[in-house]
Image (cartoon, rainbow, N blue to C red; front, side, top):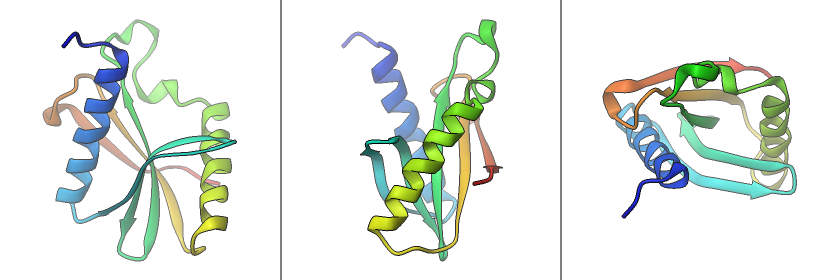
Length: 117
């Protein structure tokens, strides 16, 4: 199978989910969609729901993976999270980011509380 951006993105999300589960979190949803946007992973860390954006950027020419999460992207994630919380139990939450320069567990950087609502 030819590796394309979509396949690489899905592989990165799988790596991130496995990494977070290994660090004690529980997977609630993957690729949650609504009219506001998409959230890659929704995890549970004790009693806190964690909305996780996963970014893989192998070419640093336009900045690293973390710089690609703009204010506009953050606002879409926040609106999507608010929609999710309206449909499910409202509880404490936070926004984390997983960035990778390669789709490899050794290259995972986990940024907890990356931004606020």
